Image 1: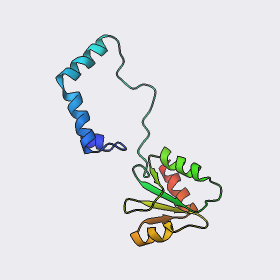
Image 2 (image 1 turned 120 degrees about the horizontal axis):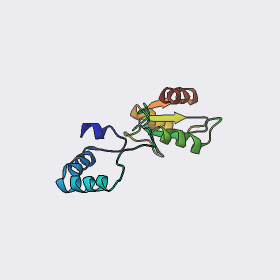
Image 3 (image 1 turned 90 degrees about the vertical axis):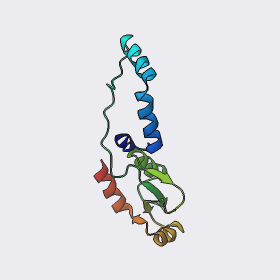
Image 4 (image 1 turned 30 degrees about the horizontal axis):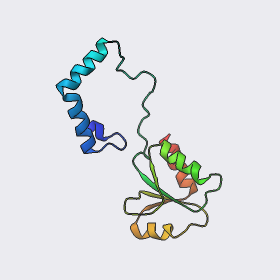
Length: 129
């Protein structure tokens, strides 16, 4: 269960459900029949990427970051396993701040959220790749 919980977006309830499903004798029987019929049950084409230090972290973006569109920043974060939100809350891990930030910056300061400028964000990304 603990191993499954390390996977992005799998919590305790989902992990237990997966373990229970594959522990069920009927499920094991079906899997064995599929294997006997020639179904390959091993992953062969994709290699798992190591978990980045951005995985499972929540980001909010405010202002304009030169050289990036907002969509590009969101895609970078999501591709590394992070989440992007439009509002700052106590669940926010990082606020990425560009030029002309809005009220999100003040809210993040009030909540003690880590604030990243463009350079700090890029360094975090480099460490995650």
